[in-house]
Length: 300
Image 1 (cartoon, rainbow, N blue to C red):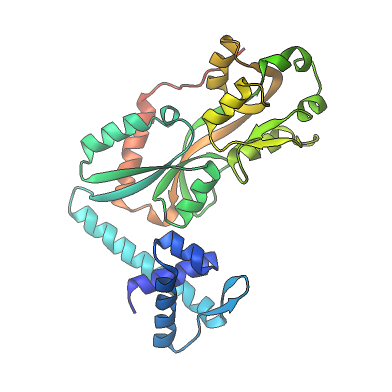
Image 2 (cartoon, rainbow, N blue to C red):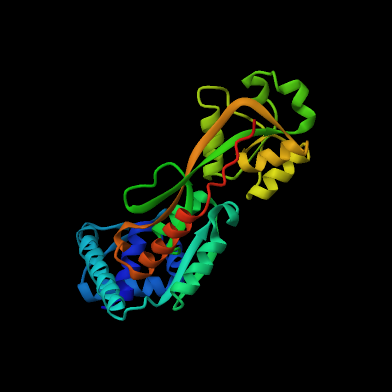
């Protein structure tokens, strides 16, 4: 038995699926299967039942899972302690980004991190906000920015700022819709990010208790959503600081009296609170956000 086999066991248990576990661990499916088979042969028990939908833990597998998680956690703690003794944290951090990097102050973060912790490599991955939580949970990201509701309890989170969204509509619709009803607004095409994105959840929240838009056009990034609204394709929720110059330049209009406010966070796994690499990231992040002015612009 080795640590990689235990990691495969815990990851397959988490996803209940060999392929997803292999993707999370960046291993081949045969390698994951080999790890599980080796453990089952060494323990003399079956850890999983293979079903049509995936992998289901057996009773012995469920009983051993918590012990396997404790062993992996203890090894991580040992590794973190050893890193701390070396003085300067060393290693690579995979950081997820959402929205515009200017909003996240990624440039300032990297400059200060490189200067203060030159032995840490920061690897940036742009993700949908909803994917950020999943990828931090399956450890394919060490930490990530995220906007939306308070993250679940198995994640540590740092609250950074409120983000205000306004309803942006094509300029050609303004005369008809500015004094129109919610039903008229919902009857128009809407541009939203794909399920299960935080942006789509915000649109659902906006229409809570009212008829939801039925004509949906999916766009998977913010700049594309902005372009489609300005091109007259549909309405959408867009950050207030982006809507302000759009309306000032008469590239779009704001539907009055409606908006949604959400929260921007940095998240990482709670069981990695003691990780020196993440402690260094938190240290620089909080300094950057304490020094920089609030960028929110509220259009009239």
